Length: 211
Image 1 (tube, rainbow, N blue to C red):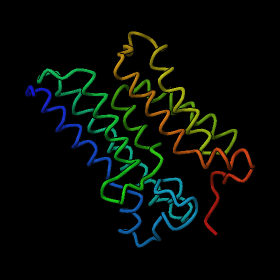
Image 2 (cartoon, one colour):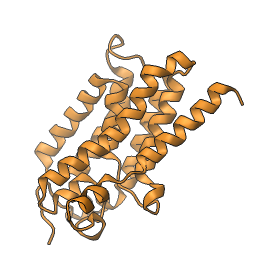
Image 3 (cartoon, rainbow, N blue to C red):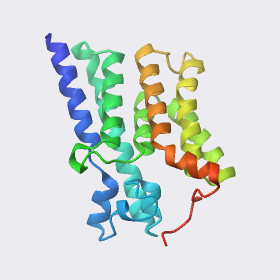
């Protein structure tokens, strides 16, 4: 195995371990709140933490979940070229951090749905791409009040924006496009219960508190 390959393996493993930090659970414990896996959607994510009524905890969860997707990608993009690492390394690290959030080794492989971590990855890949995707999310959630629906729509549009965006702003590198497409598919799959509730008309809207 070449030294570059060994570095990619180590970075990929490191990104997965960082992604495995479930900040919804960590923040809730530190702030003396109920475990988010025990109420609401039972999903360890910022939206469910918000149902606890503690906005500060939800914001902290959102930021830290995003940062764990952002920093691994940023580090590889900034320092990777000096070690011969290209967009394939960026894609692997990004996907690993995202997968770590979905299946965290530190929390019994039962993680969240990856929305905030995906946003962090997008910011690391390109700020304009993240802005376009978050804008799509905001529009859908504003009119529907369904965070789950907005998350899925935005995730699906992210690789589309990447491919058809301004070539000066970002280049459609195959590895990164594939990474975004896989992330979108995984995010939609993780929302399969939400899809069933949306179809049944029983999905919770933004702002709903736990019973």
